[in-house]
Image (cartoon, rainbow, N blue to C red):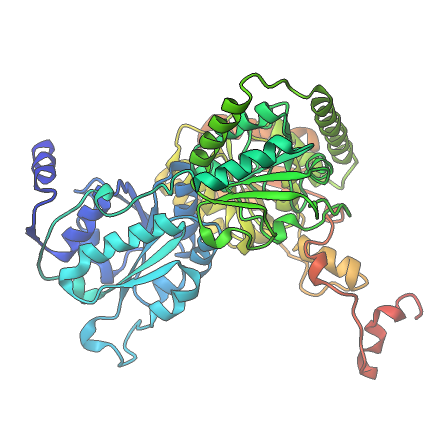
Amino acid sequence: MAKVESEMKQLRGQKVKMTPSEAIVETLVAEGVKEVYGILGSAFMDMLDLLPTADIRFLPVRHEQTTAHMADAYTRVTGVAGVVVGQNGPGITNMVTSVAAANQAHTPMVVISPSAGTPTVGWDGFQECNQVSVFEDITKETVQVTHVSRVADCLRTAFRIAYAERGPVLFDIPRDYFYGELEDQILEPYQYRVDSRGSGDPGQLDNAVELLKKAEYPVIISGRGTVDSDGINAVKEIAEHLTAPVAVSYMHNDAFPDNHPLAVGPIGYMGSKAAMNTLKKADVVLAIGTRLSVFGTLPCYDIDYFPKDAKIIQVDINPRNIARTHPIEVGLIADAKAACDELNKRLQADNPHSVQNQERLQEVTHEREKWEKELVSLAMEDGNPINPRRALLELTRAVPEGTMISTDIGNVSSTANAYLKFNQGRKHIAALTFGNTGFAYPAALGAQLGDPDSPTVAIVGDGAWGMSLHEVSTAVEQNIPVVACVFNNNAWCAEKKNQVDYYDNRFVGADIDSPDFAEVARSMGAQGYRVDKPEDVGPVIAEAIKSKKPTVIDIQVDGTQLAPPFRKDALKMPTRHLPKYKHLDFESWGKE
């Protein structure tokens, strides 16, 4: 085998005869792809047959939505673009939700999309679908193979765009194009794509430095780009030089170490009051590797914290994100780490012996301590049977340093934003702004595959769990030791809170009658625990992690202890005009 690999490397850069399937697989090998996620299908079986010999693991799942969530998390952890594949028609359309989520998460990914064979296109044949049109709005690009001879070239284009524009690309190939032969060369990635955009325009870097030097209260927001570029230490150097507090962008709690004295925590829904009270004082905001999303900067806890008059320096690798949501003073189209390194160099050259602002450090410490005290106090309120905040607090205390934690969408998952703390990058895997339920567990599986040495925990509500529990079979079959913490409050509680506050406790479709998830897990071959006492949460989680086995923990939490409405910006009190519905008008409440 080693001899064959050596011969293959010698052939790199030379045109050789191969089948389209071989061209695809060898391009994946050159790209460093180790795993492909999907469900067995005849459309790509010729390619599939080659994967074991190429030392690429085909990881079969139970539902194709899982594939892109796994690939998304795998990429966030490893930096290598994930690859998914499915049967033409329903196999590929089942991926729509998870590919759309990866698109909004800015995660490079290639979707190998077999389509109907060229002799039958247009006959509405078995499993025929115009997949390109379906995916056009939820990918960075759709690349269609127009001729067998273009297979490798088109796949290289897919990878090039996925990395350059940070998102999924559809590689659409008629299923009959896996067969035949072509002459082409297998190139190394450096021969057809460039990953870095550099440190940004020198003049704009100078402008940024001038703003930072003159700032009276600079604050840094560190985001996903910082993590992806391995730029956390570079951000740390800037923060320490300026004594600038550092917040992390919404649901990227691993974008700056929480144990750093200048860390103030996450902004965004259910984030840190310490971060919000600090950010609103800023006269200059250095936003690194973040698009400053509208949802991620909305007021929270009735704190309108995003400063209206601050001068913003925004660093983003994608020019489309610069000033997309907030007016800026300086924009840098750049790799986050490269830009920070250059900013550091300029700041240090101007003032190599900066003195820390002790008053600002004390302010940060005070805000952090006050917020931490509030978090613990809220968690220690009694619940029936368990206050969900208490369960989150016990979880964070039980997991070892370096644990990867994925979070879903929902009441408890969102509340987790306030409690999750990380001291390393690539550890927080959140559902982000596409907001689909069913993300956290498959994402945890992908993260665990990407970093098998780190414990992995998924925080999932019982509603989201109903959309992902089938993948426990995948975890058992593939021996992926993820611990799923299912916060079971027997309702869709994020939406239920809207019905409490806006619809006078009229609950339609909110309640869920769930089975015993621990028993279900055991029937699937995993470990299963049911917890209904707050003091048991931590020990059970610790035991599950230590066991290194797929585990489901059904944590019974209080369904009345709810977070504030998720979308205050998009909700209004109900008004009714027809007599039939007048009793539902908010002005009639309490008058019956």
